Image (cartoon, rainbow, N blue to C red; front, side, top):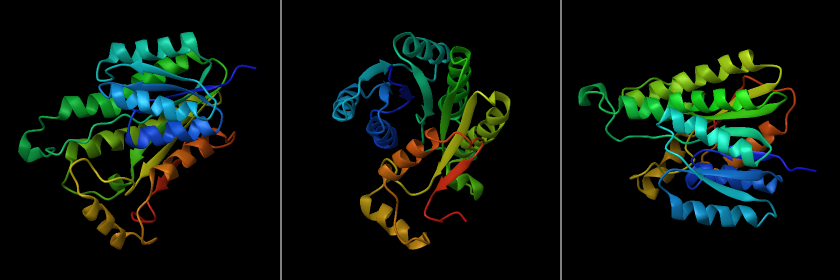
Length: 237
């Protein structure tokens, strides 16, 4: 019997890595995508293989639409791909209207267009059934002035998740996870991250394992689609 394969974008590091490990633990072979983090990708593949499954590395710059489509084609050619997790994203520190929206193309290209291109290519190659999981951000339900373009990209991805769930049913189930305080943002101190627990009803920050477990839960369901599950400890209720 052929094992199912899950493609997780940006799975060399951080949340993407946790998702790859969690799905490997559930028996999925892993198509491990990376762009520049080649050394980290090799280490993640080693962690995945400890569960007795295969891990294959795929490099692609997902800000280029043709590379999105090529990536899906390469994975399908070599695997029984049934799960796509859109985890790769960019979170620029300088991202406001006052700074001239310089990051617009880069953020929108990777955070919103890439998941759409990947999902389209996934559907074109998956006639029977499959799962698409989009990684979102819980903060976008509470408007603020920081990280303007990032927020817009994730809001668009939220809408895309719900739209695709309707358009691709009944063959493809499309869901999302809206993340809260899971890992310290790049450049932030661990102390600052830990103090964030003071604003969270559960009085603690989350862990990457919680995200991996949630993805594993969603891909095991046969009657859930169009859902965005908050993983934020109640912070954005």
